[in-house]
Length: 200
Length: 208
Image (cartoon, rainbow over the protein chains, first blue to last red):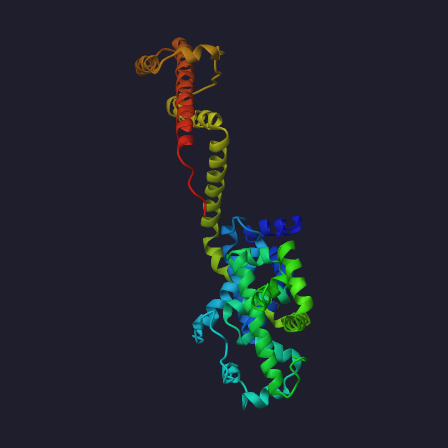
């Protein structure tokens, strides 16, 4: 992720405590950062908290940023770590990456966030896109992040490997499993709604 | 290639992240296997759905809140502003020094000698009043002076200085002092270079 000249100048100004320059940096990354946080957390309130925290952290530690990796990589890493930390803090049931999300007895709905009168009723009224968003939040944290970075933010394997500090092979296998699980979840929810499997 | 292997690689195949050889094998299998072909179709649907999710933007209050928080952070830091300035100034000096010392050890040797020289000059010439112009000396001769000689001359000068020499002798004393200082400069320069060469051999501190 090569940094533009404009961005490196802005970063240099930020190092000297220039808030205006920092806000210009925020302008560049705000939507991407917010989008990652929103897709990961599944709601605006949490996305807002995480994106705010990410920018505050960057501002506080920009003097320590040594340019070992691209600034954007560093920023995306901060936001992904904040997402992981938040989920850990909430003590969501820890699942093994290799364990299936739900077993044959359809435990999918019990794992959805409890935010409606009944999960079945709720899922019947949500639109397709919301259904996809819900399915994303059903995935284990590491799968969720890799799906967001690849299929929503459209980063390359190489970039994801740098952001998450994992080998490319890990990115590849996580992505493969994440997509397979997401497909299963969507097929299940679609069947539950009476839709055809092919439609997903 | 069996179905299990194909389905495992389907995701990488979709992203074109597999070798040419593997791709050909997969395509051969996919053209003949209905189940795997359907898997690929479903994968395509899921990925298209994900790509179809619109980008969400924060509402304007997000920026207002962030703006306020940033200014609060700066306010917190402001009482320490002067300290920070000094700290940064030292930081810059340190950075400059370390970058110079790694690239130009000779220059650092010379610079440190000049600093010490200036210090000694101020110490010794501090009590001299009136105009003072340094006499011209051949710098090439300086390298022949040893440290011992420097000390001797130094002591001699001190003795002469303590005798409170009459006005006519003053010029002579000043002239000798300049030789002493130039000798010390040469010595420091020599040691400066030696030390830098030594330190260069040490392993570099690993950067995080």
